[in-house]
Length: 268
Image 1 (cartoon, rainbow, N blue to C red):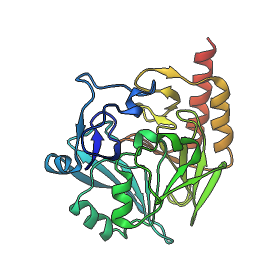
Image 2 (cartoon, rainbow, N blue to C red):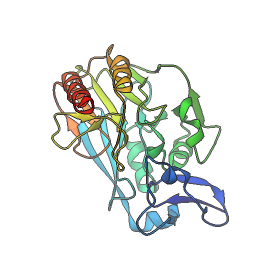
Image 3 (cartoon, one colour):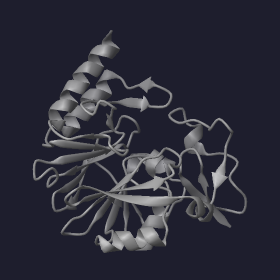
Image 4 (cartoon, rainbow, N blue to C red):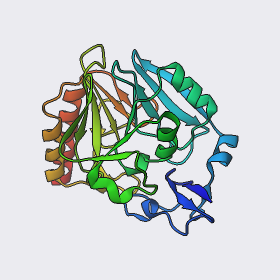
């Protein structure tokens, strides 16, 4: 019995003898089946062909990403915290070297993930560090490997301690969240967004989509919902879901300007 991993989205599935016939996440209209059809890989095979890179982002924040790039290609972020480190978002690859490196940074006390496209091998990471996983309950149907380590939270915010707060925004998925890190950016605040808000290549704006690969926009009402969720929080810096997708200054202003631009565009 094997926990197969989808090669297109990177999500690990429940244990089966043979690869599953379908990836429900990739068959959803927000994602896609790869050009070569549905393909699967095991964690062992992934370990043989890939490695994880650790990159310092700022004091208290380390990025973890896989090379060569795999599946969607996002990187996770490890937030070092006096009440226990938090792994924000997840990746498919975990190995002994990665576990040792994370332990050298203080380990993982909790895992929180923005949305189902980044669930990846979350249970492997959770079991390696005996860390609970916090997912918004609205996205529970998209969990492909259920486990008691997963804690489903409801409502609009969830404090994780010492200035870390999960904020429910919705949009890309009904349960899409961001992580507000009050101590980030030298105390000016940082927002870790996955692609609930996508930092675009100009690194001065974000965008909002129901589906990024299939270019399905969100309606104005959802953009206003996201802005309302973020309004109470100050953040100078925004960390998107990929290496170098970072807005280093004026983060909150950038979100407001981006929303204004987006709303004008969809209004015609």
